[in-house]
Length: 133
Figure (cartoon, rainbow, N blue to C red):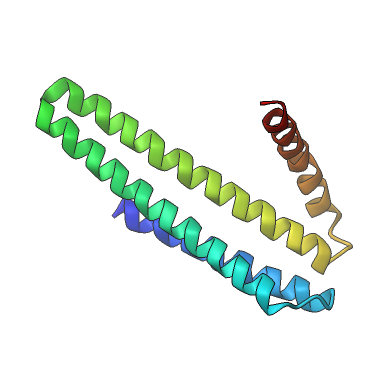
């Protein structure tokens, strides 16, 4: 049941982000079928990744049961951490994307701009670290 909930939440966030992206594109008069297609494929990829992670968690737990009691507990923890980490990352990125879209849709939403600005600082630092490596 927890897997269905995770996948459903990711699906809902992906759809909401896609719709806010369409609204943003309409308002800025930059509606493009190629960008919509690329965005839609990106959302499908996120759902596939979340589904694969849930399968990974199930597989890791099954392997733990195969090897006995102590490894079973360890593999349950490892599988859960992997699924929650991927779920959390996708959920946060979708929320950030929706907030960015909302800032363009409603330029008076100062509260949203503050949140996006704070979160962008972390994103910029990550990009700098990646370029160094």
